[in-house]
Structures are given as C-alpha cells and as structure tokens.
Length: 335
Image (cartoon, rainbow, N blue to C red; front, top):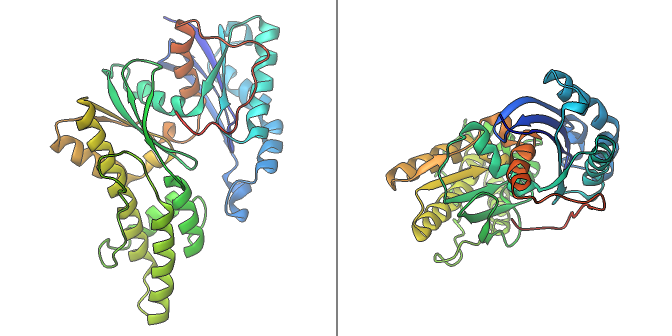
C-alpha cells in the first residue's frame, strides 16, 4: 500500500495539508485560501500571509488528518515545502513540520515547491511514463525542464523577468480586472477576440528555452493607453489578445523543447496550468506533434499539500530525508 505521508504547504497564501498514501492515493486534502484577504491589496502581502498561516496551520492539519480517518500517530512521514516562497510563510510550515517529526519520531522530507507542482500530475495520472518535458507556470515562476527520472529535473529555460502568472496579475491590475489576475483575464477574454489588436510574441532566441514577459506587459499597457486616447479601447479584446500572446510563447517553447529532447510526454503544472486557453492550445499542438500531454485537475493546479506529499514519496524512497535543522530557502529561483 505504501507509506502514509502528511504533506504541509505554506509557501505563499494557501495554508494546506494532505494525507497521501504511496505517493498517489489522496486520502484527504485541506486548503485554507487567503485570496479574499489579499484581494484589496491587488497581490499577496507577505507579513499578512504569514500571520494567517500561523492562525490556520494547526486547524488545517487536524482537518486533513480527521478527513482521512486517521490519527497523528498513523503518519509515517512528514513532508513540507521549504523552498521557494515567502520566507515568513515558509517558516510557519517548516516549523510545524519539524515539531511534528520530532514529537512523532517520524522522518522529515523537505520538498521543492516547483517539483511538487509537477507531481500533481502523478496524483491524477499515476502511470505517466518518463522521460518528460515539464512546463511549470505560476505566479512566481515560469520554467521548462527535462525530467529523465523521478526527482531529477534538468532546467532547460526559465523566465528572465516576470513570470507568466505575475504578468497576468500586473496586467489585470492595470486594466482594473481584479485579483487574482489569471482568472480575471481569462474571464474577460471570453467576451473578446484575440487578433483585433496585435501584441508581440516574445520568443527571444528561437533555439533557446528562456522566457520574457515584461516586454509583453509593457506593450499591453502602452497599447491600452493609445486605444483609450483614440476611443477604440475594448478591455475584453485586449485581454483576449494578451492571453493569446502569452500562451502562444509558452506552447511554442514547450513543443520545441519536447522535439529537441525526443520525449513523447509533456507535463503541464502550476497555477497558470488552470488556464483553459493554455490547456487547449498546448493539447492541440501536442496532439499534432505526436506528444502525450498531461495536466492536473483544477483543484491540484493551485497550491496544495497533496502534491507535496506525492513528491516527498520519491524523495523518501531514495533516502533523501532532512534533519531537524532544515531551514526555509525563499530565494530559490529554479527547479
């Protein structure tokens, strides 16, 4: 059946805990979101996030344990995200995880948040065949990696400036569409048509796998100001074009990376993986290129602790456990 792992996730603004058996069987998953708390600020305020994690973490862990029909003593491994993320937020989860591991005399596993996002795919599709190319797109990161085996990630390219989710948030805020930016722009784009306006597709060197979205953000701002001065501005049409421009680059780079490495499997992960335009466009290109595309259900795209436990399973099997001196590492920018 496999070991029973408690996963804990507090890297940003979701307080989450989950019990997962054997790396694939989710027995429970509890998430306390802070979206409503941070919405009026237009983004996550680190100090406020940390304080809410402190208030929420114990009730959320107990909720997950209870929902699984288990007790704390049934937990065989404690896993926690310790990088990357907001330092104060990470420390809340790491501190509790260390306390539980010590009190229960259980092994502790420290997990990279970006690796965990990739493993959300294996919760939904346990029989994915490796090697694979992974596209991880979130509010803080946009990365392409080659994954030859479990737990092994060879970075092929990352963003040089804004991450995809960050660009969504900034453009949505500028256009007055609200927060979080990804869902707000996707909703506005449903009422518009890409192509009415034209934004650049920033591919940089077509033979490389780096991303850059700050120029797209600036081009969107400048175009909106010009359209407003001309009296021809449509926020829905601009949202649709912005979304299409960003997605086109993500899809092109990912398919190129898969062809270059010769893999047949592509894994999409991260909060932006919930974007329907990205899912549809990547699925279409993958099918045309003879690739198998996998992505998690919407509930596992955003931050959760089940993905942390799933990732920890493979680390634990390889003996990669952490000591009680493990710390939070907020500034890690890579897979």
